[in-house]
Image 1 (spheres, rainbow, N blue to C red):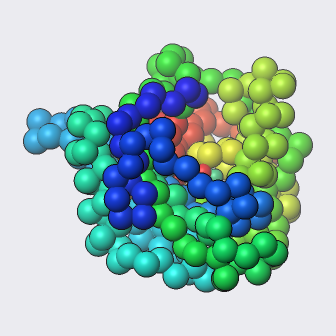
Image 2: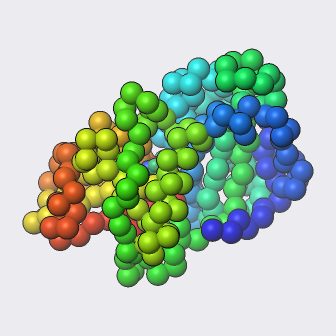
Length: 262
Ligand SMILES: Cc1ncc(COP(=O)(O)O)c(C=O)c1O
C-alpha cells in the first residue's frame, strides 16, 4: 500500500522533515535484517486520537530487542511518549505508526553489536491493509507452499525485520496465485498464520487459534480478540489446527494491527 507522507519523522530523539530521514547504505540492518519494529494504529475518538494497546506494543518491541541483544538507549516510557509525540507533531487524528529500532552504520560483518542501536518513528494515514472491501466482503486466501520458520531457526515471537523475508515469500506467492493473503503452515504441517496476521477459525460457535508454539507472532490483536470473545461468553481454544480444519470451518478471520479483523 502506498505511503501518505506526513511532515516529520522522529529520528534518534529529534524530529526531522519526512524527506530528510535517511540512513547510510552500509547500515547493518540493510545487509543483515537487524531491525526490530512494531506496527500500531491510532484511532480518532471523542477524547481525541488514541493509540491502541500502546504499552503492549512497546513491551513487545523491547522483548524482541532482548532476544537479539539490542540495548535500546531509551526506556519503554520514553519510546511510548515519543510515539505519542510523533502523532501529535504530524497533526494526525487516525494513522498507522511504525517505530523501528535498527543497527546502524558501525562495522561490516555479521556480528551486530559493534553497530549502533538507533530508533525512528514514522506515522501516516493508512487504509485497510487487505483492500477497502475486505472487512465487509472477506478475502480469498490460499495455503502457502512456504512454511513458517522452524522454532530453532528464527524466533518467531520476535518481530524482527529479517524474519519478514519469510513473510515476503508467502505474500508474493499468494499474489501470484490471485489471493489477497497466504496462510503458512509450521514445519510440522499445522496451521501457523498469515504473512502479517494471526488466524482464527470458527467451528460450531467455538473459536480456535494456533498456540504460540506454532511459530506465530504473539499478536496483540489476537490477544484482545481472545479476551473480548471470552467476555462475550464464547469458548476460545488455543490448539494445533490441521489443514483440513481450514476447509471444514464455518468461518476464518485474520487479526492484526494492519489487517484489523478481516
Ligand atoms: C507475522 C505477523 N503475525 C501476526 C501479526 C499480528 O500482530 P498484531 O496483532 O500485534 O499486530 C503481525 C503484525 O504485526 C505479523 O507481522
